[in-house]
Each structure stands twice: as C-alpha cells, then as structure tokens.
Image (cartoon, rainbow, N blue to C red; front, top):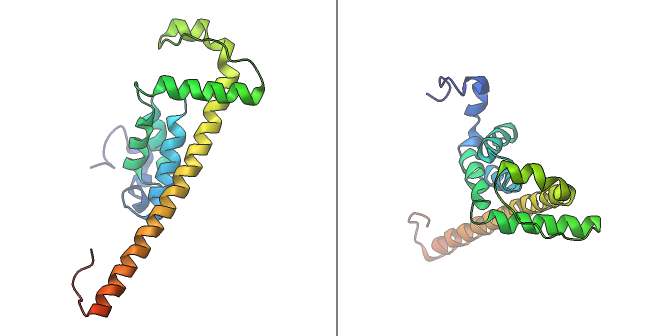
Length: 165
C-alpha cells in the first residue's frame, strides 16, 4: 500500500528497509539523532525533512518524525532564543533585543540582523542534541539488555524458567 501511494512512489524500495519500522538499538539511536537535529532546523516542513533523512540513514521513521516536535509552537521561542544566544557568544557579537513574530514581514525586516548567530546556534544545538540523544539511547538500550540478562540469570538460578519480563 505504501509503495503504491502516488506521493511516495519516488521513494521506491527505500521505504521497505527494516530499520525504518523496527525497534532496535541502531535504528532508535539514529532516529534520536535525526529527529533532534531536525528539530533545530528553522524551516517549515521539519517532519518531511526528518522523514527523508530517516529513510536515507535507515533510522526508525516514526520516532525520527515524532522527535521533531521537541520544537513546537510552545517551545520554539525559548529554543530559538537560546540558539541565537549561543551563536552570539561564539561569534562574540552582542545579543540584540529581538521581538520575534512568526510572520513573513518579520522575516523580511528583522531576521537579516541576527541570521548569522541564529543559524550557527541552531546548527551547534542540533548537532549537540543529536549526539547526546544518540549516546543516551545507546546507553539506555544497553542498560536494559544487561538488566534483562541479569533477570534471566536470576530466574535460572532459582529454577524458574518462566517467560522473561
């Protein structure tokens, strides 16, 4: 059904890669990298970008797309101000007072004064969150596997061969 959908035909067999739909350490950790990076990309259609990157990098597609919602209408002002602040500190430029509006007029009149530190901050935060998310997921996944092994070992010791929890 997905392969035959008229808007998705251009992706062909790429949509059938197992990592896109299965939950395993590599695909979930990669999905955190993709989703958290794209959350800091200040453009519309972030979910589409995350979906395309998930397909290209063979990460879990639903998780990649859902994590983009870290930047949502409630969190965007704080996240993007923090990105601008980080970029200003790195470029050693003064932080200007900016009255952010989500409008085309604001983009045309105000963004040109802050775009360099803003985009640099978005890139740095995107890369940082992507790396931290990936590492955190791999560590948590490993901890869960070790916990599962220890539970199985304890059950065997007690002579209880019931199903694993």
